[in-house]
Amino acid sequence: MAVKRTPFIAGNWKMNLDHLQSIAFVQKLAWSLSDARHDFADAEVAVFPPFTDLRSVQTLISADSLPISYGAQDVSAHDSGAYTGEISGAFLAALDCRYVIIGHSERRTLHGESDDEVNAKVLAAHRHGLIPVLCVGETAEDLEAHGPSAVPVAQLRAALEGVDGSKGLVVAYEPVWAIGSGQAATPAQAEQVAAALRGVLAEVFSEETAQATRVLYGGSVKAANIASFLREPNVDGALVGGASLDIDEFSSIARFKKHVGA
Ligand code: 13P
Image 1: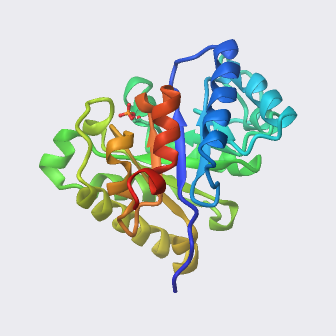
Image 2 (image 1 turned 90 degrees about the horizontal axis):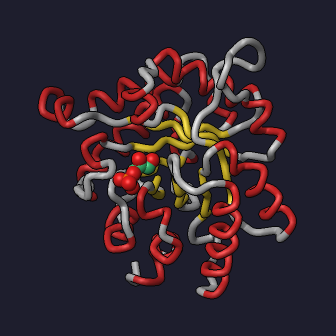
């Protein structure tokens, strides 16, 4: 049952680049990919800028019909009301966002997001037609205590409570110890957890949905190591942090097939 999953190369800008910088960046990224004749059938390319950039990114991408996807880095679990500082999925949908990152480890640790909250955000994203890029991953202590898959598998199960599998999902395995550390997981480690996560998708939804869902790896991905991850059968792309802020590097990551002959 071989299903073709288009690789997904996603840049999580985190709290970097203001709206003016975002316009220059996305324009140059599009030029870089076009100059290199990037085939978007080889990899979908997406950027995840801060909220305040989204309107500018939308305007540029739509005016120039750029083949780049975009989304937000978080969404409120609520649709509207007295939630100071939060952003509704309705607002993101109104800006034509296709995706939204949910449950990033920085939100889980720095903002105390629980599995229940992550689950509520996944449901909220779906209410507004957004595709969650759902992040799961274990800390170094979790890895030591429970091995590589236990925590990400439990986080995924919790996040999918009551979720309709037909509404679209991307899963990102991001070991916390690999984020921003320069110490990426090995391709074999990423594959082991990605396969376990796909197993959960098959159990919770169906084998068909599991085969159609893209599972990404994230954590110190760069042009020099991307191809080794994409060679693994269950790794369908990458969620890139630091390296996504360098246009040449990110463009090179998106072209992983060409530059290493993978
Ligand atoms: P780095 O690529 O900087 O390790 O960040 C990964 C990440 O957190 C992407 O969401």
